[in-house]
Image 1 (spheres, one colour):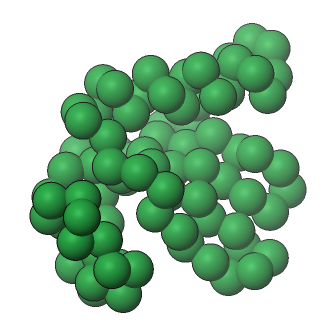
Image 2 (tube, one colour; image 1 turned 60 degrees about the vertical axis):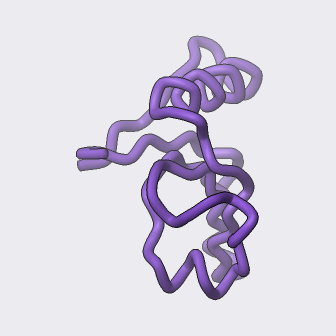
Length: 84
């Protein structure tokens, strides 16, 4: 994935569609997700200093669709942020 996608939940929390490191995969004991390859839906809380993997997306497009659905419930018009 060349760029990550994100949607701000509030002033401290951001939902990301991103790749994760092997260290994050191992630290969060995500073995049931079938490997550290692919893209993941992650909740970052800068106030708490946490980066929690919520799910593994079946594809980039599925993950993007999920973030678009969430973004549309948070604000009008829906807005994803492209991060290079």
